[in-house]
Image 1 (cartoon, rainbow, N blue to C red):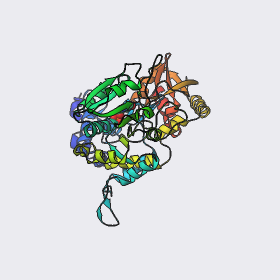
Image 2 (cartoon, rainbow, N blue to C red):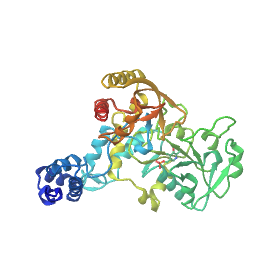
Image 3 (cartoon, rainbow, N blue to C red):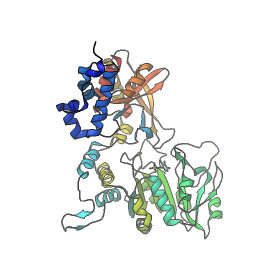
Image 4 (cartoon, protein in one colour):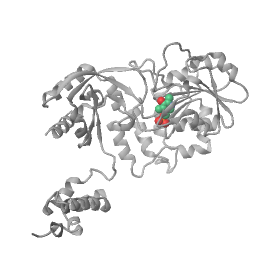
Length: 426
Ligand SMILES: *Cc1c(COP(=O)(O)O)cnc(C)c1O
């Protein structure tokens, strides 16, 4: 018998296969070579036959040259940090594609001169928050807070309630972040109660600003007391409000979630927020507020290190002016529609049933808010193959079942969801 290793096709012969020639054009030669090498290894190990190597390599080609894979978020967590927070709207994706080549991000095509960078996105932000005298965009909310601390409080104190010194995830804490800008923290009050006199006692010549943070990932209840923004506006120092979630105007389902428009009307001098939480846009840090303060932030030398790229500006503008993004659709979805979809999907699958469940807003804000929802309930054993399939589907485990919560799945993905489940059940 001939040694099967002798019959494994050579790399150059495989790379000449028309399908793999095509793949080299879209994925690059090195990536295709590594996929081919893995297929050859499988043939040497006897897992596949030598004449299957080309087909095996073609089947194993990734869809794109980046390793990030598309996921259907069936977790029921609307803003899922580990799944990249807000999915972009179709309009935002189209805008990103348009802007990905050479584009007039900083150029006026009428005059042929340099123009204000990202003016379209900035104008859309200003229109969305009418109470803002000025707006600015940076890399994320952490960058917005860093720039604020660097500009308004270098060598000075940031006065903040003890109950609002939050960790934003992955071990990052707001106080550490802002202290790295050379500011000191002056904590006032206690974990559960802070009064106006705690702030007035702490404010003096060393104060850079008062910081109000909306705790977006936890909720203090019981014997509590906090001081609201309107009460803090007469202290003679700027009031900066970190609202976190990025609601620009009030949302009826999220009455406890602060929004930028109201915060500014209430007297905040600056508001900071994330672009990829409840706003449903790209990762960005949004700054709204007094025109003179925004101008100082913009002119800070470090602002350049925190600026966003043209893709972010394109996605942000399209999110603001385009149709409601997936996050808004998920929040506003009607539970009767979700139940119908769950039933229709369950009817097409073995061992599946439609169930009622409860979805959550997630890392983006509104701790404790429960969103009534509907799911397709599957055997628990489906979870792992669904996660590793194409497209990957991430559900959640509950009472020994794998639930696919439809509040976070776009209706147009229902067919893909059915096919993914069928593939892992066969
Ligand atoms: C999420 C959050 C942050 C961090 O925002 P990033 O955009 O992730 O940098 C800061 N503050 C609050 C209150 C938040 O909710």
